[in-house]
Image (cartoon, rainbow, N blue to C red; front, side):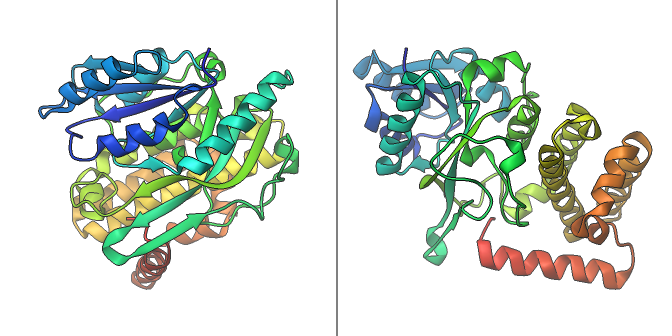
Length: 338
C-alpha cells in the first residue's frame, strides 16, 4: 500500500497538468497518483494515458463524463488505495522538498501505529502576474512536532483557513464519514474540508510550504468575475456546509469555534460577491442567504452573529456595504487570493 494517494482532477488541462503530475511523482515509490479526466476536450486523455503507461506502479488514469470538480474529487477518492488522500488541482503543484518531508513523516507515524486523521501543511498563493508569493502558515495556531487534538488548537485569524490546499486526510476516514461532493458545482473544496472535521480526532501540523496555489488565469474558478457569474454555486455550497453538521452539538468547543469561523468566512465571501455584482437579483440572494440562516439554521446563525465578521457582513446600510467592500479590497491586495 502507498502511503499517500494524490487525486488530480483535470479538465482541459493539457497546458499545465504536467507540472502538477511531475511534482507528485517526486515520491513515486510512496505516492499513488490518480489522474481524473473529467470529460476534457483537449489532449488531457493522451497525456493521462501516457503517464499511466510510463509509471504503471504509481499512476492510475481514470476518464469519465464531465461531472465537475467535485465529481472528479469523488472519483479520485473512490480509486484511492493509499493510507492518506490529498487533492492536487491540475494547475497547482507540490513543493518537492516539502513533499519528501511530508511523506517521510506520514510513513514514520504509520510505522509507529499512530492513527492520524488529518495532517495540515502550509499553502502558498502563487501570483506570477504580480511577482507575488504569499504563504499561509499556522504556526501561531497549531502545535508542532507532535500529535494533537482540537482542545489544543488556538484562535484562527480571518486569513487562516484550513483549505483543501492545506489538508491531507486519512483515506478511510473520508470514506467512513460519507463524503460525496455534488456534481457540476464549483467551490466544493470548502465542503470537502468542512464536512469531515467532526470526525477528526488526531492532527499533525508540518510547517512546510507544501502546496503551491496558482492564481492568475482569467478563466480560473476563483477569478472574481467568474465567481460572481457562478454565485448560485457558491451559495449552494454555503448552504450545504450549514446543513452538513449541527455545530452546537459538537463536544469540542474549539472544534465548534473553528467550524463557525470557517462557515462565517464562506458566508462573508457569498455576501461580498453579491454586493460586488451590484445587480438587484444578486443583492436579493444575499438577503435570502441570511434569511435562510436565520430561519432554517437559527442556532448556527446565532453563533455566526457572535463573531465580529458575522455581525459585520450582514450590515444593510449603504455605509455598511462600503465598509464590507473596502475590507475585502484591502484583504485581496494583501493576500492576492483571486
